Length: 471
Ligand code: F0G
Image (tube, rainbow, N blue to C red; front, side, top):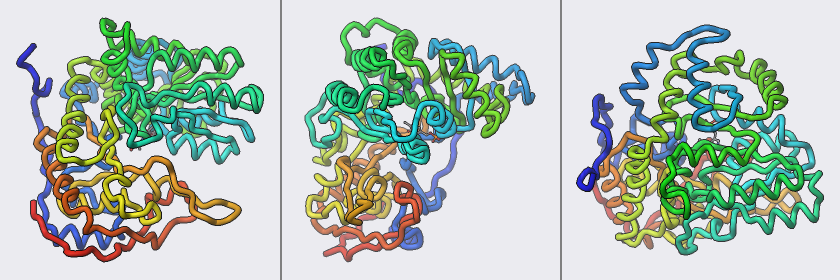
């Protein structure tokens, strides 16, 4: 296979994307108040706002769709999905949901408790939102190296800091910690993986204190691939052997199957505890749909049953992880500061190192999102002062997050490396003239601060010596 370095698929269907002029893009940016979430997707040339629900499905998945059994109860498609999930997770009980956050909701209702702590490496927003509604205290205990976007490369920047976890348990008492949630890979700091050793040790510590462990498994296959590549003792294991071992350390897993499930919609709540299952099923019936479809059509269950298996295929994963690395390498060649090494589902550009003259209060990463769209029609997303900024409830002062980045999420099986070159070239040019850029002012935010990035409005401080490049 020495020469077989290209994509392990060929393209059977294409979707046209539009090339636009800089003047058009400037107008659309203004109309969207410089918020990527407010733009029309048809005006985007390369869309990297998310890797969620954006995968291209395979011919096998499209054929499976036709087999979808649209029965309310006991559909054939559910049992196919159940079998596929059991095979990969090694856990018995499966409740589908319409997407990941619905599984988060069920999980939070079961495992998050008012006034008690939920420890995580970095909780994803949708669990955090659910936990906060319940009154739980969601704390992020990723290793310090994972929080520092300028730290040197490390194979597992998604690991939980065991010392911090131990300290909280001894200070607050194990009875005040209701759950530990390990997110694989860790989305908020670069799609960084968690090692098997860390999952094992976190789980052992939790078990000693009778605290249940949950895995947020949106990107389980990418995490397993990194374990195979980087952790001693796993080089000869199959991806499925690795995923099964990962889940052997938890009681329950949730999954947004819009990522490594290679489908456009769907979620999973998976558990080995039949008491937990019973509660999850009740919550699913009220909020999602009957237990054998969970808010999805039979055809969605079929596509997911197949997609999960394709997602753990090693040849696919090799292509996937290497495409993200390819983009990271091109950016590094141009001096663009990124989180290193590149993670599973995207490249994260360090907003503070890119624009050192723009303070966090003026949204450097959001400014970069705007510049990238303006120059090349590429849409990325801010994970920084807008998305994770907050106001101190007592003093009203701004609190800024430690991670300040622009995430370029790479959709699965969708773009070629030529698209990656466009992104790298555009960012390289912006980097060369970075001093000309000034920050932005937040002029509108909705009532819920943790959701403000979706609807926020900005104004640009005027740029100096604007130079036009056309793509
Ligand atoms: N957990 C993680 C780790 C996620 O990244 C996401 C979604 C969810 C849960 C929620 O799943 O969207 O299916 O309801 N992440 C997307 C993103 C939105 O762009 O990173 P969902």
